[in-house]
Length: 224
Length: 246
Ligand SMILES: Nc1ncnc2c1ncn2[C@@H]1O[C@H](COP(=O)(O)OP(=O)(O)OP(=O)(O)O)[C@@H](O)[C@H]1O
Ligand SMILES: [Mg+2]
Image 1: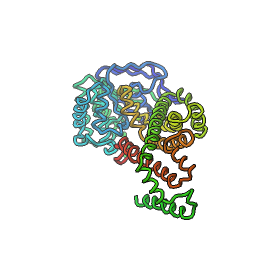
Image 2 (image 1 turned 30 degrees about the vertical axis):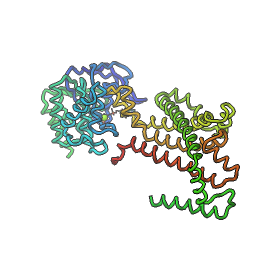
Image 3 (image 1 turned 90 degrees about the horizontal axis):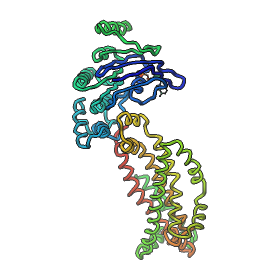
Image 4 (image 1 turned 90 degrees about the vertical axis):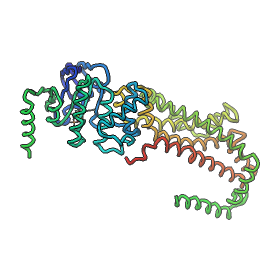
């Protein structure tokens, strides 16, 4: 469960949100779309407690948060395996079990064989997948995804989305999923909210997903 | 490497040439120095004095680096501590070393304590500043990541802060060691009755040029051992992960 009530957030003179409210029920997947600079990342940071709201209240289920940042944010001095394992150790796992579980997740995101690589030796998309493995491995109660697949190719994106759908089905996970790509959100999300250029939240009507997708695609196609 | 060897040879040649033209009583040739050095090493003098100086240096460095590190970490984590230490750092960096030796001689007399106190005091500001800039240079986004994943204080320190500030801290320790060697000799010249610095002064007052130069060579050798035997391997260890292209 994620609950934001009448939240206002300013950075100095810039007001990113005013009186924003959003309720996400348990195990719901909410897609968040909106133009660059509209406040998508800020919304996730508010939920994660990384930035504080100036007004209003934010309540989030206790328990682990999995966060796939917009950039990988890996420890440069740790291998991909140890990046995942370090986070598991923070959640109380013993060293050996943490490494075993980390290895299993590294494999699930398609990086078997790259366990001992340092982040600088990975491609952007590979580093992004380590970040995804790290977020999924902690068994998150709340999963915050900031354009998690922006750097991976279509085939891999498909398989990662399947993993995501599986852990969402298996586990008790509430998800906020930021993306530029509305069709991606339509595939995964139960609900989609759009941050409008005026920085208001607008919930999309998903009774006909194909229609929504068609409209969005034709808008992009129209620019060709 | 080739040019480093050439550089070393150039120093030797220059030394040799100078010694040909300068009065024997104040300038020894490389060969005379080598003989004096062998004589000192043959008896126990060299080793006894070397050990005395080394002991003072190591204790002084350890104390100074420890204090500087702790101050730097505190200042890096807390604005108030930083403001509090700022005048201390300024005074420490501004007072000339000679005055510090003079004062500590007055307060603690001649001997070990004066020298160790000197070395520690001289080293603290450098270690402090490098530690502080190291901790301020730690990637805030990684710290944020650690917080979101509920890293304990200990994990934040060992996984994020320590490796993140290893480079500047190592640079600080290297500078501090160089300063420490100079400080220990200065303090021994002025404020002790033993150690390499004192042995050098003694040789100087007896106009024993070869022995004077021999002690200088001993100092250089000591510094080389510390730099290549301790500091470089340590630095390589803490920055091993950097061997990969950035
Ligand atoms: N720490 C900060 N300090 C000051 N302003 C900030 C800060 N973080 C974000 N902002 C501002 O808040 C606004 C929203 O930023 P945010 O990163 O949330 O956008 P976004 O929707 O995630 O954009 P993108 O799609 O490009 O990632 C921007 O105008 C940005 O300049
Ligand atoms: Mg963003």
